Image (cartoon, each protein chain N blue to C red):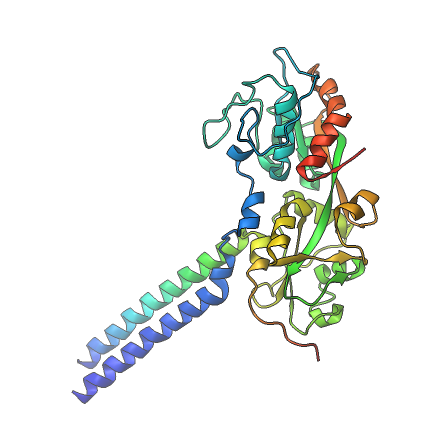
Length: 52
Length: 319
């Protein structure tokens, strides 16, 4: 693959990747703004750390 | 050939990097925001069809009353989602059959029973499209809207409900003082270890403006400004709601209610008044509404029969 083609391929992957990630982040923020507080709290999964 | 391998490997690594990032975001954050209600929560996710009046299969409290409203000018009832089972039961007991018109998904325009939720109901009573609404205290914005329209509202307390603070079941904290809760929501306390828990960050969740529980929270804060929380994705949460919504999720074992100032919000402590955060809810109507059926209906709601409906639906009677 020529360098020019490779650069194009990388540019396409980056563009698609950034757009997808941005869309996911926007979707998540919108979900968060409308999420039920009770549901959100009930799904907290990370283990609790002992107080030092 | 070697160059092509390197190029493909680089491109593959880039794709994998994006995929890993998206998967991590989904697993850590997105998934948690999707409200897939547990069985206990479904019980209290108010579906209009489940609590319809005049239906044999309805889940409302059914009480046969000798008092009946008749005539043409029957008041349109409306209100908060959490109180819909209460005022639907009022209609079932004293309105003539056919007063409620439901098309399978929503109420018809000319139905005497509506459910526009707190924000919509306050607007409807001010504008005159609903006669009596059943809601918690209004927000400042809702009062200002009434004043702007030149409308005076009458508030008749008809029941009470505990305003509760909730955390995940795994959170070791069982009790908070009023001062600690206020401190959490003003940003004074940012870690659970400052209020008797572990050393993780506190995510102090809030609801949208105008909702019944947000208005109740603002009233609890008593004028102290709440700080917008930006730790919500990282910290361990605390939230608030009315007990009616929460008690079945508590039974599911995923969420727990906190004692406030050492008092746990159960039926007894609410009735006795020892639980410190109790909010009244009201029947609200325009003072200039001359519908002749409003005063007798309010009297009946405050009678033993009306109060029994309040109590049997899961709230605390006012009398």
